[in-house]
Length: 318
Image (cartoon, rainbow, N blue to C red):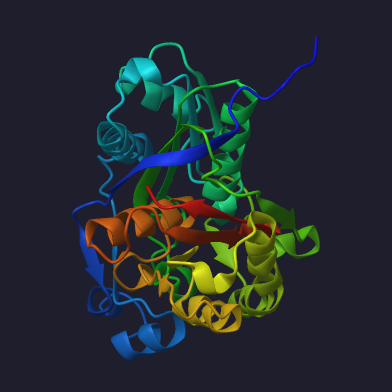
């Protein structure tokens, strides 16, 4: 007997997102460290970010975002048979977030695992969900990017405290007669792994900003082009470019090189900060909510960050 793919393709059926209520502005940070609004905006493009209180966990945020995506998809919890949470900021590595979130959402006995590819995590998880659906390992997959970076940041260190934030974004992936998720282009630069790190469980997140900036603005443009090429899409056909919201200067540098003149470029970082694995689904969900992009258009998503890892693919906007 020949083993064949069960579904010819998969697609994102719906999106959802969640941000904590607490807004921290640049002026707020200037009260506790040597910085100011102009300094922060000129270097990373951020005006404000959301920070969760101690009482709000990563799993809490993931559950809300996942629940919104599930509701928007029109599916019931019984329709989901795999849950993947992309995160690098769990307070504890055991138990995993995915099983907890699935239980809270009433999804019974799904496959459940977490993915840690840092800021590229959502793209890795989405590619895994696409493969699972096409191979018949799952019919519907809930993919969530969720981070509580605030608990891993030294709030007196302006190199990191001005950048990182909390939030969650989610997507429901299901079978499709035609592919709605293009082939993933992924990879890593392990020789630069120390550029973003948490040394041990008693330390905070450390980032060598200039190293990451130089790598991102030179190495990722070819990845973006290759993702378009493998999907058979010209950049001029893109409706949206949604890169990881790491730094506004990085986003705009890659967008200029890409040549996607008709694409709306996600700049969610301005008001949401860098939410690592949550940033891409959070940004795209908010763009849809604001009417900046339309269902059925093509979006290039591109994740990159600690590892250093990267991944990108073209998807059809739900």
